[in-house]
Amino acid sequence: MKSIIHIDLDSFFVSCERLLDNRLNGRPVLIGGTSDRGVVASCSYEARAFGIHSAMPMKMARQLCPEAVVIRGNSGTYSKFSDMVTDIVKEDSPLFEKSSIDEFYIDATGMDRFFGCYKWGQELRQRIIRETGLPISFALSTSKTVAKVGTGEAKPNNHREIPQGTEKPFLAPLSIKRIPMVGDQTYRLLRSMGVEKVKTVQEMPIELLERVMGKNGTSLWKKAQGIDNTPVEPWHERKSISIERTFENDTSDMVKLESIIRAMAENLAYQLRNGSRLTACVSVRIRYSDFQTHSRQLRIPYTASDHVLIDTAIALFRQLFDRRVLLRLVGVRFSHLVGGGEQMSLFDESGPLLQLYNAMDRMRNRFGQDAVKRAVAMGSKGIGHSGNPFDGQPVVIPAHRRA
Image (tube, rainbow, N blue to C red; front, side, top):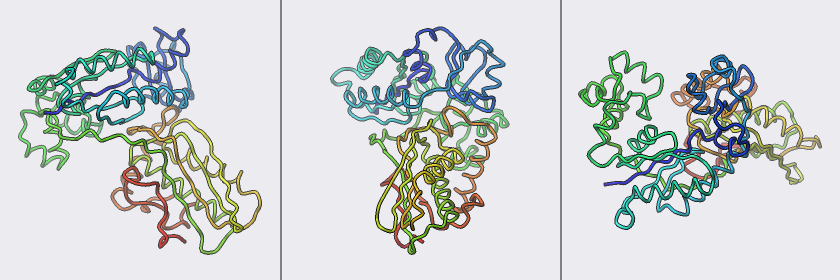
């Protein structure tokens, strides 16, 4: 039987800010976009007492808690703290997976012969707290799903064990929303069926869920029983994704070149969202007909939003391309990648844009990557990669697809 530990850094962004400024301790704190169109990326437990939660519009959060301290956030700072924790986990763990900037899974199977997995997890937690100052919660169980739910129940700044044989009764009284795969849309569907608690799903025939939800219904039923055989994937930090295009005929056509840059950035942004990643660094590379090669990069707040990444790539290209000499190659690269779940920006994203991009991505997933394009990128065919770029090497356009 597996022994899986799930680790979650509590209110991670807020905790980082409090380490840098102890005047924030005990106060309601909001991290995110500071404009009315921004959203809450993270909030303190003091702010949650007012009904505030992540992804809530910042305007609404301010209305609920006018005395809250609002901080724009610093992606570089959070990356450094995340890297500190990653280094500790990497040093102590036999096998781990970094699922986001503040979450980890550890496969501790077999360690009970030497230490006791739960005791070992407590010691790891204490080391992280001691060396970073960050509050952290974890849970130990037999699967990733139950361990993750257990961590949520252990918070804030605590730990919990759900031993073999107790998974099902542990999950039964909880809201069905606590199962990781249940988002807002699935939750509304289940509530329309009269499902509120996990126990109801546990008692339902699996065939009923299969008829209503297809294979997702099967997965949901199994997870409600505490059954999840998903392995902990060995963590290898993905540094970047990129696209380059070499032209058959060198060009200095600004309209064409900017159209290609836009299409590349849009394509990579879609791949980020498909891989549940965010980027904090955009790079543009150009090669002139005389083979002189230049590149420029810019650090930005973590995002996977088209409009931010396209604008950044275009701005970098305009700074680079100043000789008006023919170009033979252009490329766009996103680096400093972290897990980002469904949220497209940690600090500043409006609800309507998020809904728009989700709708566009659903169309692309169903009808192909070129199903939806911006008008300015319509002249750039054959840019992209249909698979998951996080499964292999950085994306480079194959020779037979280069214009």
